[in-house]
Amino acid sequence: MKKRALFIGGTGTISTAIVKRLMESGAWEVWVLNRGSRNDALPEGVHAITADINDEENVRKKIDGMVFDSVCEFIGFEVSHVERDVRLFTGRTRQYIFTSSASAYHKPAGDYRITEGTSLANPYWEYSRNKIACEEYLMEKYRTEAFPVTIVRPSHTYDERKIPLGVHGKKGSYQVLKRMMEGRPVIIHGDGTSLWTLTFNKDFAIGYTGLMGNRHAIGEAFQITGDETLTWNQIYQTIADALGVELNAYHVSSEFLSAAGEKYAYDLEGSLIGDKAASVVFDNSKLKRAVPDMRTTVRFDQGARLAVDYILSHPECRVEDPEFDSWCDRVIEVLEDAKKKI
Image 1 (spheres, rainbow, N blue to C red):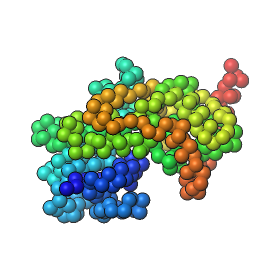
Image 2: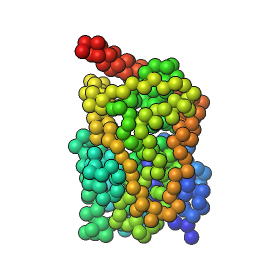
Image 3: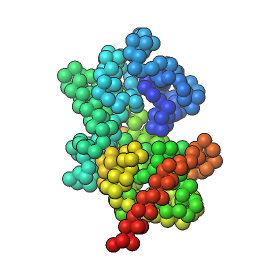
Image 4: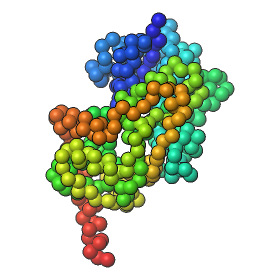
């Protein structure tokens, strides 16, 4: 008899890969609960429940009589969201998996190797603080009411539709790729030597699906990342190599970028100072004990080429961002002028 999973969301970068892996396994009956706007990307055989998860009464009616082995939450960002889920799924699921974030870890940590025991704190990013609050609420429900929660903490997960970068505008990564292809300077935060971990979404799905229905995962938190760690200089050089161009790198301090981005509502304080500016290397031994199959199958040089090929062959991914382009030029111009005045 197949196990039954419900995905709240189910069509994002991470969840799409998980849904596909479950359907390929043939061991799961998969349901997705969302507004239905992107369900055409889902594999054949996935069951859809079209609803707004925030319409609690309507959702309760649509899942009436249903019991799930795993409920997978991907769009819970505030405590009110998980409070709603506890009301909806208490007694209706054997496992509730909450997607938190590795940005919740205190950075820089006392040890550059991040484990699930690394303290959670992020004074720079409200997004991360809200994820921490969600975790704390859910673990309290586990301790006091046996609510069957599992917490997962992704770091920087990507797929073929987007290339991972440290600094980009509001319209995605293409403008940076365009600057690379034109031979123009590309901003890299700091001196580019801090360490970062990137995970292709198919690899993330190996770890996540291994936790689904896993008794050893109840009441526990797991970080799910790949094993490959690179400097930001190596990341940008790998992207340039995939494009077949020379990298014209321009290094700018994260603090300066954060301040320079405020006028344009670029949240670089959170994404850089509170996350990417620090070196992180993840110790995944806890996950691998629970999921022995977890491994990296897509190196970044391979993933970067997949992403570059996809973006360049799909016009809808080539969204230009003149505002961000001008901002980059202005940041570089100001710093070059400052050098001349010293």
